Length: 207
Image (cartoon, rainbow, N blue to C red; front, side):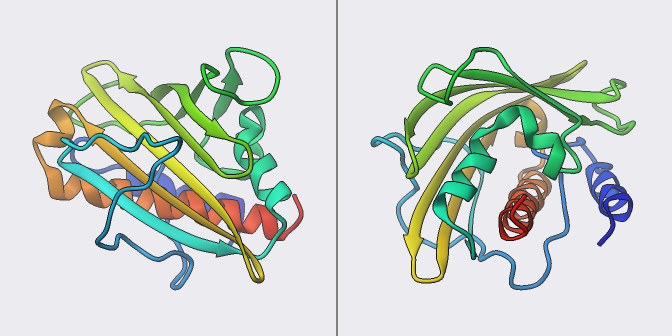
């Protein structure tokens, strides 16, 4: 799929009631990721997602690439726009390897919608836990005029025969998402599966 077409699909998915594009929505090919399954939540150093959140989603995919490649792509935040079409900008607010207490700010398009007239959704994420090559957990708000979504995001990375099993889980809270939980959960699902699709494509191509 061309970058132009991919961007168009994602922008269309973002144009929904409440405009809940915290991560950027994408259409993942069939079989690219496995959706939410029952069981305990993902954790990093014992900390997980928001247990009280009504909007949550968990998914996973197998990436046929070395762990070092997958980890480098995921933690080199400033280069996210190179492989995620819906990430317009990304900047670290500190230097060095991504670690606990690191912070970063990134943006994604926010089409016209009833909740906000802003063209851009800005997310400021703070890393709370990290185990190099194994897990990440960050929190932070996505904001625009009249819109705020608070997210908690956990990532697990496990070497398996043939590659790396990447699992991710996220929760959202806020007045706009709580007003329509099914729609908010659907957009979160599209965002997480799209992120895994892009990560898989970039890692397997050796980007």
